[in-house]
Length: 375
Image (cartoon, rainbow, N blue to C red):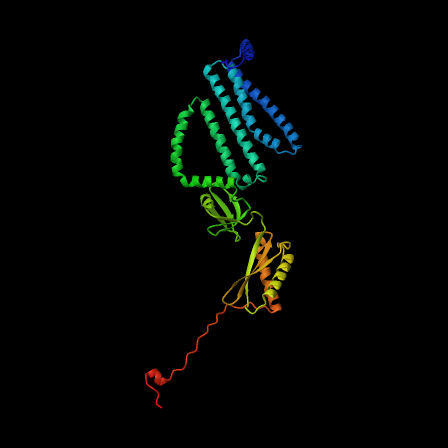
């Protein structure tokens, strides 16, 4: 009993035990009663203090105090119970009983610390997920890593307090980890690929991408094992993270959401190319002004590209504000260019091919049969 405290506390403890003995009451009867009273008093103080701090925190603009109060709410309960066990440990006469109470107090402190750290880190991730892209991309990976680290350290602390050497445990974990790594090779490859995607920010939630295998859509989620991509047809494509990190990724949102679209068409060889360019650019400017999503401040460009078999190939390049308006604006361009070309008399020919045969001199039937004509 009680050789873990300073002398002033030992004298108070001895005085208390002497007072209990003078009353003729068993210490085994007083210990549970003292535990209940101690926990009840501290619990009431905890509730009142927590309410007061919550009202103060509500008047501040920072999220830090809210996160700390949220993280403290449950761990404080463990500390209150653990302090009651420590008080009981100080008055119990049996060596085994007071040691058990001391172990219970230490375990309560370890659990309170682990729970506080876990709730603090996870709450910070949730609060700042909307402003920090690294958490926005995959909060589940960040939460899982933080929880694994916190509870692994808490487990080692519990084993140490129970008198179990963690050195053999660490050695066993090393051998076991090798076996698990071999058995879960693909799963671990996907996990670390997900960590790489989050750290490198190759893909982020809400980003429109196209991967090398052809799938195209908006990133809906970056998880432990896979990344979810929602296509334009509202189909969810699930890609393993290890495959995604090895794939060539095209991003339509970087460096900016604005992008260029190219419209290719052909005009007749007899067309006046200067008139074709003028009508095409006028039509493009009109469409960019009237169709939502166009960038009229970015001048369209016109180029003659090649001499094709049945037409001169031309391209028209315009800028749009985002990928989502690409198809509607391209539709408007095709409709308006066809109308304006018809009005201007510019012909866009069908694919045709002209085949010319060289004429041969007529052959007399006698010559064909090998006989000379009779005079």
